[in-house]
Length: 400
Image (cartoon, helix red, strand yellow):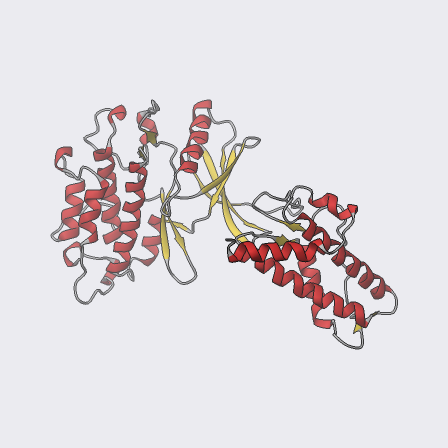
């Protein structure tokens, strides 16, 4: 038996199969066997109306009554039918130029007596040789994006710079990580390898990456607002214990996930943990910068200089011997910062201090042996009854 979505899509296709298009428009949608004809029909009808309106704007400034009603009905069809596709998880978009034209026409279109074209109406740019309806899932060849975007540098590392920009089509902010010019083949290989590792790590608490560009050695990834260092420093006096605990657990969940996937980060630091902030105030922690990470089956090694800037376990004798317990040491430092706002270890009394002490125990055998064991202890942490932000910008470990 067909599902409701299947029946709805069948009716939608039948609706447009009854309408004629033309070769001039059909050729623009040949890559979409499912909905190409529908898009071709809608494109043809929009062009016919927009060309007529442009003509009326130059002459009588009056758009006929029948045509006005037809265009209003067409706009209604487009809105309803694209929404129907969206409900069936088929995301179709209309070219921004035509979306803007529709929004400029709607206010003065009338269902009776014809419509007066405003004196200040700017003619619609008629699109004839590229599709105006596209499906970002790849079923339709995407229209070219002529608008150039401005990149803003937001970070820089030893072998790559990070920029941000707002995508003009979706109005969403993304980040671009680009290898620096003139870096060594080893660093470039590491940069590409970082992308491949992050591409296969799909998890809410790991930064998502999208596409690698070989022509300029760069890749796009989701944008995060701050590093963990900046986020906590700016809010330290006001952060409640419950918020700190959520941040800590997201950080640990991310690490437990990559460990379960056979990946050791090997560069855990306050700079390589990012925070994505939403308008509601909610935050999500994201692990990033996997340039020094190691997979179980990899023979990739590091040198002493490559550990500069990281939190290094003093008990690590050989970089090749790096294991989960060495990562636990770095995790302890980060947890201490999350709960106290301090970048140096200052042991005190209390459950948080006990966790940090165990993570950074001089004897690796006495540390947590896995992230999941550490998570179990953090999950049961409780705040004092008041759960008040710390005074003077600090949360004493003894009070948590």
